[in-house]
Amino acid sequence: MIEVKNISKKYGRKKVLNGVSFTANKGEITSLIGINGVGKTTILNAIMALTPVNSGEILINNEKINKASYEKITFIPDAITMLPQMTIAEAMQFMQDFYESWNQERATELLGFFKLKESNKISSLSKGNTAKVNLLLGLALDVDFLLMDEPFSGIDIFSREQIAEVFTSHLIEDRGVIITTHEINDIEHLIDKVILLDEGTVIKEFNTEEVRENEGKSVIDVMREVYRT
Amino acid sequence: MKVNFNNRDPVYVQVVRHFKEQIATGTLEPGQEIPSRRELANKLKINPNTAQRAYKEMEEAGLIHTERNLPSKITRDEKVLGAVREELIEQAVDSFVTSIRSINVPLDEIVGLLQDKYQKESKE
Image 1 (cartoon, chains in turn cyan, green):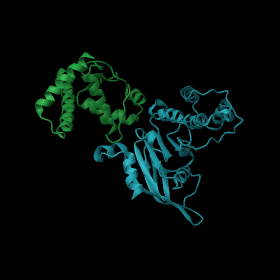
Image 2 (tube, chains in turn cyan, blue; image 1 turned 120 degrees about the horizontal axis):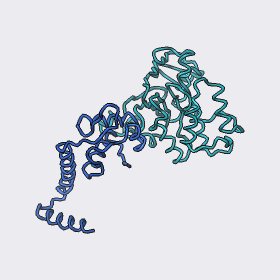
Image 3 (tube, chains in turn yellow, brown; image 1 turned 90 degrees about the horizontal axis):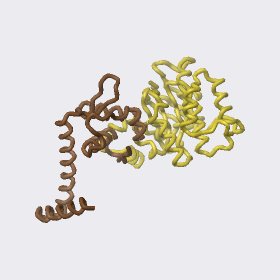
Image 4 (cartoon, chains in turn green, yellow; image 1 turned 135 degrees about the vertical axis):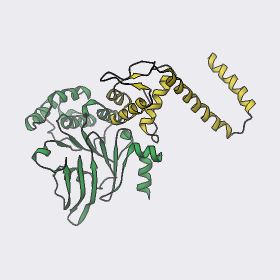
């Protein structure tokens, strides 16, 4: 379980996060939702200890992030970080050299799943295929938690559908996933839990099936209520 | 298998309804094996936890059975199967009655119309 406890973060005088708390469970897909600039990416960076927070703490399986827990979690940024002149095979090799947790078997399966060709250069790929390679490089790691920053942003509908299918497949196994997004249409039926953010705070946290069951509301209904008032 | 989910009913409830419809229409036969939870999640593009929940509900209602690690199967219990059919018929009639009542049509007229339409549709 990832526990974010009352974290605050300032950039200069600007408060980006203001007492954010939530939990994300293993085996569940938790979605951080908010319009742009509400601190979603900052939260992911804070969980990865890539950005220091001013107050509050983050626990991963009841411990502060340390070398061992760092191996159990990966961050997939919203854009690929590999050099464009690399081929997909070279990018995979790079990951394999760099990470002990690289799982070549799953990587090969993901290549087939996304219908990607190993010999293709990253620079030659469409936006959608670049996003898939980016995702593949993170998904192929044997980690307990995957943090994905806007995996559906700025790509065509068929690529989005294909990426969404990963979440319903065995490739995700029973790992915990945190996704940031501002677009929920594609994944409304996929996510377990929603954290709605606004101006650096959590304004609502709910389980999607519970809100449908108890209130007869869709995720968008709840968002409309929260953001329009 | 393709289901158009609406966004306001729990997905697991919609999955159970889908199975009931398939049972009532005979698409799923008594004793027939059904996909694993993971396969179902994949086919319907839903969260695996939701598929799990739907199967748990159906298991509890006696619609499906799972023995040890074998694939789950549709029940052969005729009582349960009959109840599924009745439930779906009742739901369909209820929603028909609700919508027709708001137009204020006498029952005789409805029954006549119903017979005509039903026979026409069966011939087509």
